[in-house]
Length: 439
Image 1 (cartoon, rainbow, N blue to C red):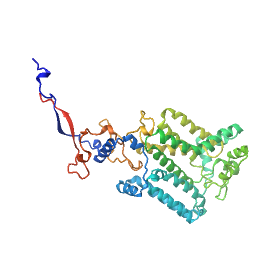
Image 2 (image 1 turned 120 degrees about the horizontal axis):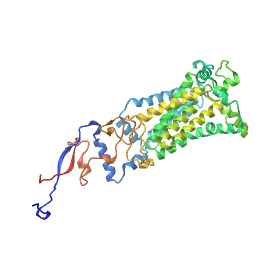
Image 3 (image 1 turned 60 degrees about the vertical axis):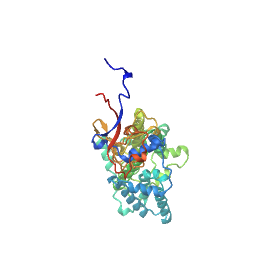
Image 4 (image 1 turned 60 degrees about the horizontal axis):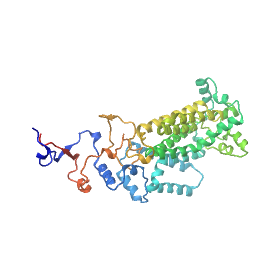
């Protein structure tokens, strides 16, 4: 009744090529240049994961100029204009070092941004550089341009919010064990934490996470220093030393509780540095709390199972700051809230999403950026994808993996398939479809 396989001559399911158009959903269209680049990498036996995790090794300024020409500028690039303004302002008021050294430093920075091998590190590091220079330049701001110092505002807010001065309460009982317990996070871990966080993010987070962290960390401190300049407030050690009498900019800073650490070790570690601090009345907001919070949030993003350990570090440095009389509790809340706001912006727009099945940066073959809405149950594909892009200026929701490549004939030449100048440059792909001719 039914013909046997021997009675059938030739293949029963011949392989035919028919034109097939992908669904006309703009968010799912795969860019031609991206398909070409990834196919070229696959043919050259270079996986997308190795390309994403690789670092620039070029010393040619032409590559940087080429990247600038192909870069699609957006509002996010306005950050560089702000950094330029901060740099010019600082260089114009800094009295030491002299003009020659300042010119040499600025020239070295511009050269580092021109060479691709150094640009990949110094470009995301620019906000941190701007913060350090701005912090140092604060000592040279003329007194006549500075606002009056607020002495009573923070103690009043402390009493309104908490009903008491928490710094005075916690610092009332002092002993050597508590001094060391407060000194470790405030005087040691605080300065090492950004470097340790950067190393951990570089190894275990998705490619591009360190750049986002660097920018978030830098802009957090820039905003904090600007607030301290325009809204100078006296810290708790001032109230303990001078009471509520008016302050002026000729007064020196104080190491407060850290002076006991210098006495304990018999060395001048903090007294001279804090006495000559560029920003003496920078109580609001607390950048110790802000930096601890931004470090903890990024680490919790990459290591969610250890998030409570990182959050406990925030509470530890909160207590240490109050115990050493460097900040009021309202200062700590302001610094942490500022960090939380910056982290949420970074996570929503620029931070690579966590992929639980990936262990290190070298395991990633694609990254998804930000929290974008999903279309048809699929994440929107980034149509402006390029591997050397600046994550802060690409507001896309995701990038694409090699697994989403369209089906192509492996024997077909890459150069014959499609080029930028090809007359057949379209979104129609040729796929292999099995057709049953008996029907």
